[in-house]
Length: 104
Length: 231
View (cartoon, each protein chain N blue to C red):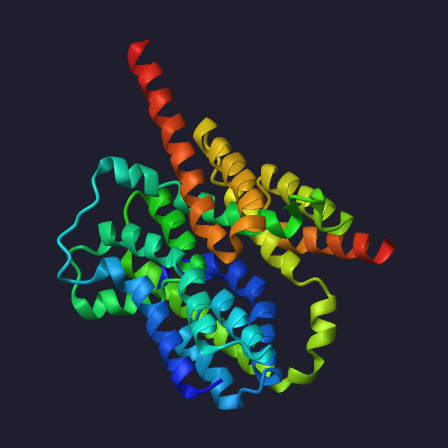
């Protein structure tokens, strides 16, 4: 990797983050757009984590990454539903995930 | 201000801990891909985008052309455009220097923690967002530095299944946002769209699946509101 690639990657990621914060842009989102964007974080989170656990292929169909991922995820879902602190959810479900991985 | 910094630190800490394995991996893989230690650290100092960095060093290791590396960076970090659109509503009247700083620190984690804080207290706090982003930047760069030092043991790190830390963190952060039917619909539609689109669209699936998830939640919210207004 060259320094030019590092610099260009830095420019690309910064511009994606800065695009709508450019001072010349007079666009202001209306209430409907704000409402729509209110669901963005929930959607992005789901879209990123789900494919770690479940995958689909047109030939093989739906498959799970492994029992460790499924059981660990269910444990995390259950603990979050119980309103346990985030750090505890991560620690306990990771321990559960590691035990299942070790057993199987 | 100190209280706000403490609150931001407490809010970003679980995510900062969860991201340490990824930071270590980003540093270690960069070294394995042939980067110098300074280049590997500069990726985290200047680019500061985990998925884009990991993808770039993986592509570099497989001798992919520069155009492929840069286009993957554009696609993977394109979701940040959505975040900047949300932040525009918060930062419309702020100075350029403050916008630049917020934009530089605008990651998935900073955005999520800041939006959760905004929803909780009822208004956006610039300094909460910047402190959270700053702490996260610090953790990411220290983790990368550690990764550079232990670059040779990546194989073992990979075998531990540390990507599950991200899964658990994201589950906790998404499920705690559920307030009613629209959020449940967002999760279900985003999940189905992500599973199906990832197999056909590659990395760009993140953008399309997110748009599908957001729109479905919005439509359910609007229809529920109409029903409420009628009754």
